[in-house]
Image 1 (cartoon, rainbow, N blue to C red):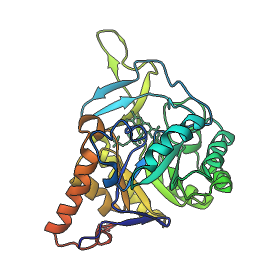
Image 2 (cartoon, rainbow, N blue to C red; image 1 turned 180 degrees about the vertical axis):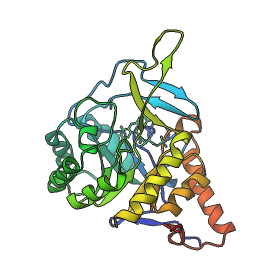
Image 3 (tube, helix red, strand yellow; image 1 turned 180 degrees about the horizontal axis):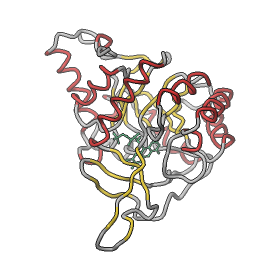
Length: 301
Ligand SMILES: Cc1cc2nc3c(=O)[nH]c(=O)nc-3n(C[C@H](O)[C@H](O)[C@H](O)COP(=O)(O)O)c2cc1C
């Protein structure tokens, strides 16, 4: 019997495959394609204390082997989310991870406090979105601010906290250590890389926001490198993401030190990606005579 189960801060996942925030709605959109029972966890789109309408359009565009987005964290707000999205996900035998966004420390804490008594397994704090003017990245690019917000959020949280790191920094290990010092339980990385595309025929920016977050297969080597560096720097479990589209991609992250992985942009070009990756990891383990996935986590030193 092959063991694919992993534990993140005491929360047991049947396999290491999760969805990446913002690319899978809150599960409902994809449930026609994907049996959510087969996923380790579903990570929801970021939710704030009040509804946000997001940025003006156009806010997505394709790039070579990837995409740029500047959605701006459009979301229904915590009230509707708790009423509609959590009960939907509760029907499935998978773990629920709620991604939290905000413009100030108080905003984040309000959402975290509100979720304390909801049937949610983990909270992922998005301090790394490059597409909102206030909050978000302001915390994710300054180690002191990251440590402070982590400490504050921990005061209100009943669930373990995942701090989601930005790759838009000089030294990712400095940020990882700051989150660890603040009391983070788990780290996830990477969020998107800030980029730009110009429409030469319109002589204009392709995105109304001018810049956007780059994701998809093109970012994978950067993400694998960062996961490896963070795994060497801290002792917290890591959720790795950035360009994962196949089981082979996921296994690179796991061998670099990730306990679990999130699949994002790949859901847009292959809605079955998550389940295919979970199956592919199991097939690889069978072929390579690996009994327990823990033999692969951080296997590359
Ligand atoms: C359209 C889109 C929306 C996203 N929304 C969020 C979000 O709400 N919160 C968040 O933490 N990350 C968000 N992300 C970042 C992803 O969760 C992920 O970190 C990133 O895209 C890298 O993974 P990928 O290359 O597999 O997409 C978003 C990414 C995309 C492409």
